[in-house]
Length: 314
Image 1 (cartoon, rainbow, N blue to C red):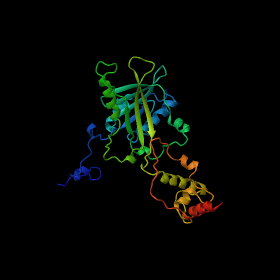
Image 2 (image 1 turned 135 degrees about the vertical axis):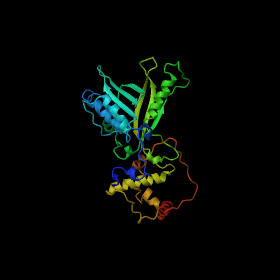
Image 3 (image 1 turned 60 degrees about the horizontal axis):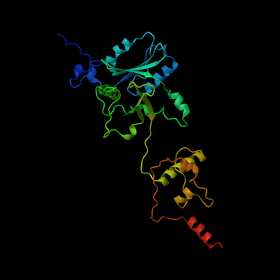
């Protein structure tokens, strides 16, 4: 009797017992995944559609960034696909009959669901037009943002408060579960390039305990701390020199100079690079204190000659 044929290309686990098939189901989800959807794509308008695309960028990389909604799709269709795709959260934008923009944050498959009314928003393109040097569009979206929640829980709140304690805890848990956890001991600081701030503020026009959640997204950069002011001026002077000569990158030519102070202060005419433009490129911080060193410094020959000439002149 012939031996039955075993598929090797499509059934890896059949011939390799050490190979384990990837687990399926909710337990296999390691990092949270989300889908940002417009309910009624033809009714929400172009502004809300662009807002949904901006929120997809905020949720990167664990979101369906190329999701295409159709008018025939219903909410049940998306909920059905959350299980096979491993989607843990749904962010649903919709517009009511009165013209209000609503946002629902749902945890799949059994909830809970948070309902919000979008009072006002700013699109990414409008923010970039308002900035002089906008950031973004690079590798910022390769890693998830750092979630910062401020003033979500009220001190001393209980079950009988205007906003019960369990609702504040539920809101905190839902937002925290939307992003992967970060281990401060193992996560490199340079890998954090975005920050998502969720700030709670009381509603000014209502006294029923309603509050407003500010959802703000920032792109951040990290710089080495502890660099002295002369080194920062040298870096700024190098950028200015490269800009004047039309060169990109590289180190300035210091072969004709006898000392670094000639480059920083300048020659006999005093045309150095410690100008207002150089100092303006530094960070304006009130916490910095400049302390003069008592250690002796080397003085260039041109500086000594200029000092002798000033002393001998009648």
